[in-house]
Image (cartoon, rainbow, N blue to C red; front, side, top):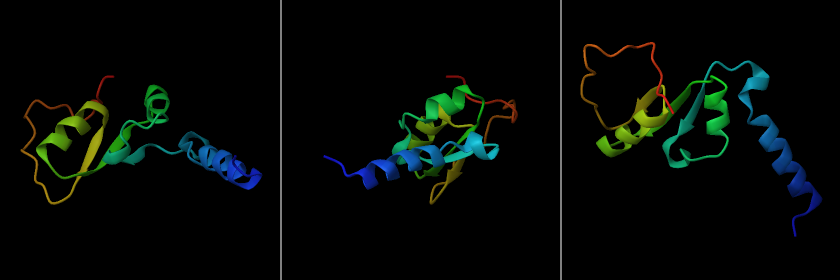
Length: 92
């Protein structure tokens, strides 16, 4: 059984994680938690999701499925296609 204080912390943490309340223009999210349940509603509301830290071609492929932009570390991705539209976002 959770204590009242841990339940309060969980509720307040969930509330603090909604960036729409603070006028955020995007949310930057780690690859390890890419399946977090709160990302879908934020993306559906039009908030771009940025992915970090991508370190391999496999992680890049996964990040490109859900993220509008990517932060790479110790990995250099291939140059983007010339016809890539920088204003586009992934469709999910």
